Length: 273
Figure 1 (cartoon, rainbow, N blue to C red):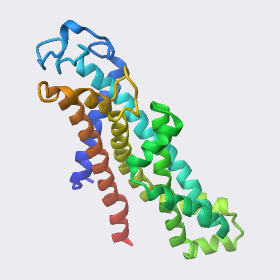
Figure 2 (cartoon, rainbow, N blue to C red; figure 1 turned 180 degrees about the vertical axis):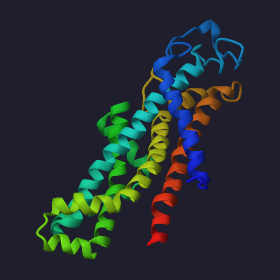
Figure 3 (cartoon, rainbow, N blue to C red; figure 1 turned 90 degrees about the vertical axis):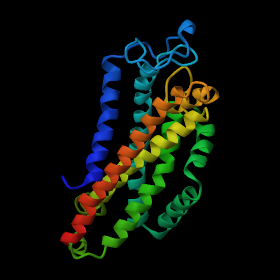
Figure 4 (cartoon, rainbow, N blue to C red; figure 1 turned 90 degrees about the horizontal axis):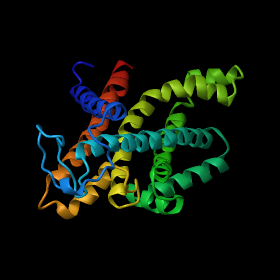
């Protein structure tokens, strides 16, 4: 693990975001939604009350950045968790039960994967509604086929292994085999995919908020902050720098952790075998 540079860098980047998230509950310099027109467009100054400056409504950028971490991580982690649970169940049902269930479930998954992620999320948000709850549902539906196909393929790859056949010969039920044998075998790949998917979910959430389909004003979200800053970018570029860097750190951090876990849990395991 010490030699896995990707994993170490990813942990550091995600740790920064988690610290920001924790601090948002303990202390924020100002109220994230407090407006003060007399202090609008203040430039970043580490010796002033507004370290990262203020936006076009005089709101403190640092406070909104900290508050935005709550929404971003809630949607990112919440949507991937929901999508993982549903995807595992559907993938297991498709692989372990009759051909009719297999055909129906996997064709639906193929149909969902045929759409680009952001386009599918935009379509779903218009149906389930804008906001945090709608974003979680929309992104989780996008994540379902990723995990269902992963579980489906791994179960089919392992169903002819000797210990699976032995479990069946002893009369173990499908539920027992799935919990005792399939889940432990699939866990390394599921953990790796889960971490990488959080980065994708964060990117989709910020894109939805940027387009006005995610977190709604006056609440803060990094994508919404970028959207509000775009008309002033040439004159006040610092408005977009802070949320842009936060998005990069978060997405890159979770992706690097996923790559690192892939090397630690999967590649080295295959080498040992």
